[in-house]
Image 1 (cartoon, rainbow over the protein chains, first blue to last red):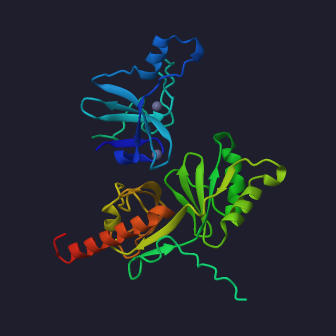
Image 2 (cartoon, helix red, strand yellow; image 1 turned 90 degrees about the vertical axis):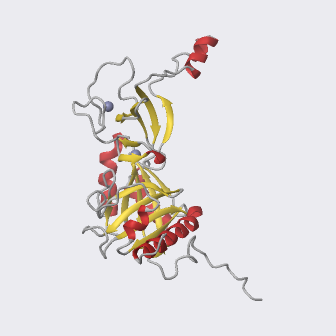
Image 3 (cartoon, rainbow over the protein chains, first blue to last red; image 1 turned 120 degrees about the horizontal axis):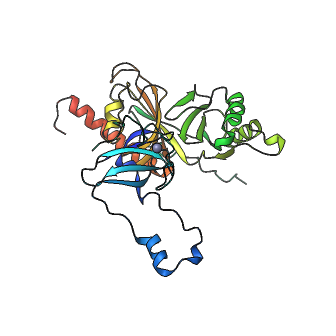
Length: 114
Length: 207
Ligand SMILES: [Zn+2]
Ligand SMILES: [Zn+2]
């Protein structure tokens, strides 16, 4: 069972959460301009890394807020969690977000481990 | 002609709790307050004047009972009152939040019928809850005034510690558990069963 640090509630048991897939997938700016292949890519194609993965989790039985969690898909270590969209892929480096478990903090949190 | 009999209002778990450390605090008024981030300062100031206590931070409860306020998520608060009616509480909150100026700076909704409140007291309370709840309930982590939404067994609940900051297992230990009306029967049975298991384990029986 994972222990996932919610940015608001702190480390909580996995059973309080719902998985929301890969994080930072932006909705197409002009959906009607997309061809079938680009649309299918947006809908279905996801990264499948062996290692660190940014993913969305919904704290449905807790504060009912979404957060972006970084989890290692090999050993299940949860590195941290951030408010949604705080660090979009390819965005500028804005430093740590307001989450105490932010993955960009110098001292990584011990909030979530396997 | 005789007046038609009006059915008595029954609370969701009333038949289950005879003689246990669990009791039901039925029909409390409950209002949800929802505040946008940019209105948060104004709304907390106005709500505080009406409530007599500040809005709580994450994981906390404020107020002493009539009413008290629970943090239920970012920008969301649950106001619980044993004396007011849900409608009265909402009317009061709406007026306090600027309704008389034509525009509220927060949303107020009457949720009184959604949940009932169970109260679990006594030295076994932490251990009984631990049989279904994944939270660390040690007073060091979850002291008096802590509030968390979590699960007990299959039921989503709000868990509020109202007493017992000494070592775990103190006589003053008390929790309030907010549970949806349709889960109250399930949860009351689960907790009375867990309490019996804990008692038996203490007495040395195999469970
Ligand atoms: Zn949370
Ligand atoms: Zn962050």
